[in-house]
Image (cartoon, rainbow, N blue to C red):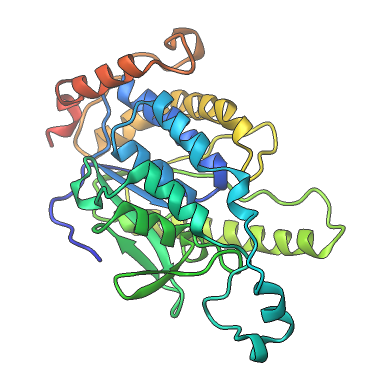
Amino acid sequence: MSSRTTTPRLALVLGSGGVRSLAALGLIEVLWREGVAPDLIVGCSAGAMCGALIAQGHPADKALEIATSLWTADLTRRRRWRAIPQMLWPRVWGFNADFALRDDKLILARLAQAFGDVRIEDLSPKLRVTATDAATGATVVIDSGRVVDALRGSIAMPFLFAPHNVGGQRLIDGFVSDPLPVSAAQDARAVIAFGFDAPMPRRVDGPSRMLAQVTSAMTNNLMHARLGAAESSGMEMLRIFPALKRRVGLFDTEALPYLVEEGRRAAEAALPKLAALLARTGGQFEPSCSNESSREPNPAGSGSSRHQHRHRIDDQARSWTDF
């Protein structure tokens, strides 16, 4: 599923995390303001959806509007009536590898409404979506084909939704194999890794919380091991992990304005390190403002100003992209 050609100068990698992944809209707004334009976006799970919105060129406020209508709790409320008997009497009711507790028709409809028939290879910046091969557990990198199919495969949370067939492979959620897939950007000269640690339950008072505790621990250990291995192999990487002061659920869309603001704050704080990263990889970059007092007003951002930033990127970014 790969057709890579030119070497990306700067990759933005967005990890899993449910609605928290959309904090990257605040990050990209700061990067565009500074004239820093990633030429590769990599994402898995909810991070892939956010990455696709960014790759389509939507300004932050428009992307936020689309995300709010796309990522809602009712996606998980359409039960499959066969699911319970399939679990109780698997042989009689035909339990198989495509089992799911929920119906995916609403997800596919929402994705089609947001992305239509857009193909990954037609996007700029380039987009790579990662998912997990259900049969082998290996990471699959998708950089061609319909955006809708790639995203549906990357968000196929095991047990909740059925795997999705893309290019002859049955795919499940990308977080299973790599929650923050910097390995899919190993050809980039510099990488911004934007993600979150999976939250641990405050208390374990039932089976579901115990399962969440185990799953979060495994996810976090896998993610940081992969990041460490990438850095050890020589990847030039800047990690940005916003420190959220409140708990945010997977589908807590009411927290989106807060998350985007926290993404901005984390990006502002990381600008000096970003300048150092780009300097090490052959570019030059001087932050125009790197603190709260000097930041642009209007936290939500205006569509016209975001488009103006996109139009100015080629000229602004020459100092660090002309390697």
